[in-house]
Length: 165
Picture 1 (cartoon, helix red, strand yellow):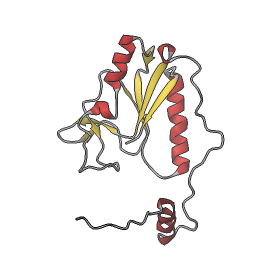
Picture 2: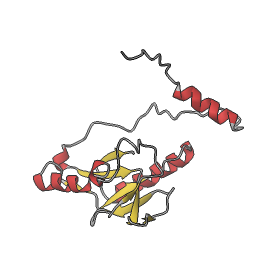
Picture 3: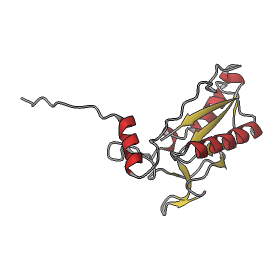
Picture 4: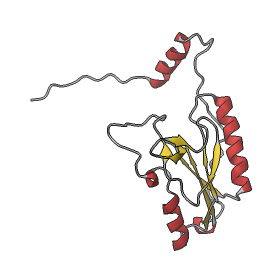
């Protein structure tokens, strides 16, 4: 017979506020919110749209040595063809004991999107995929978002898949 466990939920928001105050910040963390969210219905079907991908992982130049192809902590754009040989994910928060990130298609589905183009489900994919660092600065996140938006415009992207890890 198993014992009943009483669990108490942890308030992530309260814990974050306490964390920042304990480290000497003059005010608690302010969560980002946007009343004028940029999410909108698609203006045309996917079969007529160019799709781009944004990831929080970083391309590897050499997976065996975990040499990064771009600096960690900065927004980047990398060609989709050829797809990256690997992505660095160890700096991100995910359950490293319960799963892995060995299969790039699970979090950077470039080959899957290529097959969607071949089948006609998607008109085309962007020539590049984009990456953003995971930081907690709203100012830096907004700057990165403007950079990614500019790159998407340059690549004539209609739809963006945001795939955080």
